[in-house]
Image (cartoon, rainbow, N blue to C red; front, side, top):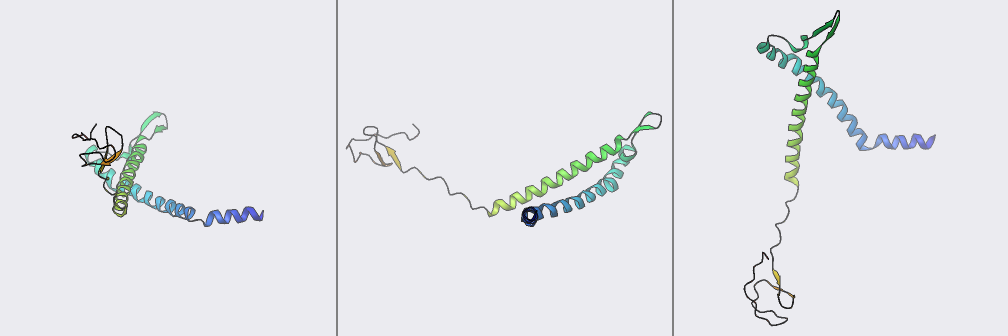
Length: 143
């Protein structure tokens, strides 16, 4: 039992678990902000054009049984706004991280070619092979 408790303490004290906990708490707070934004700002503005608040939209199926599809539409709008905000945040973070990544060196320029006669590697600007002494014609490097 002591070993189990010790392993659990190690698991909890890892940085990843603490980061995840902080992320969940901030995510919950962010969700309430986005929900308030949609319910208190977006829905009334859309209500100006549609004449009704989305939360109030419902369909009476049978007797007192109603389908509150307006609340579903509000949840969809919440999701889309949250996804848009997260996309913008992640895009900004990726752009910032890309600035700190060292740039790759340019591809090395080709400095050698292969002699067509003896197949030795020689300098790109050689006109005679130093190994077989063959006179080299202008070679197309794209071959």
